[in-house]
Length: 164
Ligand code: PNS
Image 1 (spheres, rainbow, N blue to C red):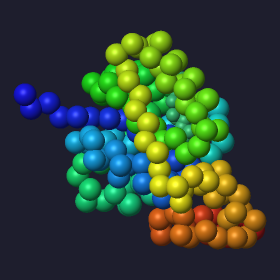
Image 2: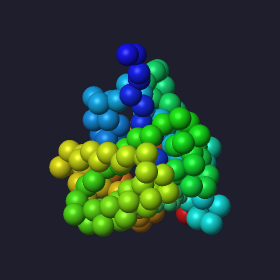
Image 3: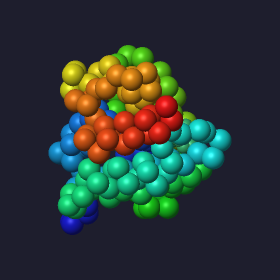
């Protein structure tokens, strides 16, 4: 049987952090191919537009054949099914993530019982890391270039310099 193991790793990626990359690298130990699916939610205000968020991901994973960058709108389950995939990957940083992730996994399963969610735990050095906090640090004039890829560091500096 030559069935490829595929998974979707959905998220806002506003912006991509090294924590996301850590999860993707762990996911690639188990899955043959991971589709990184960037959410476009018209009701939400993002710092980076969809094209910018996808562009940073493409730059970071350029040449990595087992990673595909895509985007979706609406229900994650519909997107996942439309791609013919049944596995969702998410990261669990700390107990505080557990409640919402548990709810999302069960809701997604309720919508379609064939969907399974698999959680990966990032390196403890990223357990405190979130896109939200990274944005806040850069917005207030700090920088944490060791926590994001160089392209994201650059884009954050550009974004907040333009706003200042
Ligand atoms: O990076 P994030 O913001 O933690 O990712 C959250 C995401 C994109 C996985 C979640 O908001 C999502 O799946 N949104 C799509 C809408 C949906 O399917 N909602 C019902 C899921 S319980």
